Amino acid sequence: MEHSRIERSRRQPSRGDGVRDRDGDGRARSARPRDGLGRPLPYGAVGVERQPEGVVRSPEETVAEAQALLSAGKPFHAHEVFEDAWKSGPDAERPLWRGLAQLAVGLTHEARGNVTGGARLLRRGAGAVEQWAADTGRTRPHGLDLAGLAGWARELAETVERTGTAVDARTRAPRLR
Image (cartoon, rainbow, N blue to C red):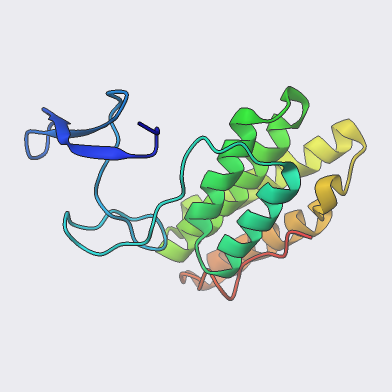
């Protein structure tokens, strides 16, 4: 059974309702549906299809899929695509993909209304991609505009802190290239 599939029939005891969802390998994984920003919905609700986990993509496929998800207002899902690249990519690029995942999850938090946490993650991600570019001398790996992404992240963090309001993930989505 693939890792992203979750079985409600293999539920184990937990703190909440007394049972815990498990995936096919027995690891704890919530089977609750999620909304477009990755927030859990009640069992039985109609949610947004989840991103499959553990997918190995080329860097170009990763960037294209993440951009499509960001443009569709699904930064949480884009974060999962970047996380796959972070976990499966070459060691030298893992800090880059981790930084991009932080940018996407920062946007997720901002869209959910978590101004402080979102701003912190956006700045952390901006610093990570800038540091990776400085360390490697690569400013446009896989066509990514790292300087532009870092600038976008810092500007968004400042805006939401100044206004104290959540953002629309679709209208504030970055252009990766």
